[in-house]
Length: 243
Image (cartoon, rainbow, N blue to C red; front, top):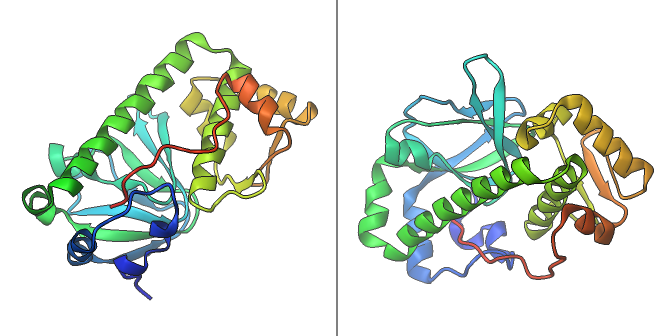
């Protein structure tokens, strides 16, 4: 059953900005339907010119680039509320691919109507700019991590950031969350070898800080994990727009 924008379960989460009735009505007209895909499905392909844009409503995935060697570089992890396909809408083709790592439900939008959003809904258009800026910030932070942080700090920060994002969209509770990724995905995202990533995860597990096993993350000591990650504990994550 297709969710109406006014009843969207994500809009109830405090992580997302409020929308006016007019904005909700526009998003309902902008939305062309919903799509359900299975784990392992490639939703958007690098180099392709997708006619659709998506918002992840449920489930998790990842963004990655394919290198000349054939290997892939994981760029980011996808969670509910993430907007997908903007690159194709602006640059005419995707610069990276998006794959579902669990079963997913996505809101579907017609890319041809993207410019109506800029013309008629300046607030929503600003939200797209905000999302693009945050993505740029994330990539800048990732480069800083790759250049200046130890292996244990990299892995710890990734787990903290993933849990905080999951908790904000009701995927994480009591310091537990689904984490349907491979250790190789984490290694790629952090610029580490699989062996080194495995060693760091084993160290966190043996010290009873965090355990990632069978697609589930359990954080035993969030305070210590934050300390290892060199981040401050926060009870109020940054409020963000939802499209």
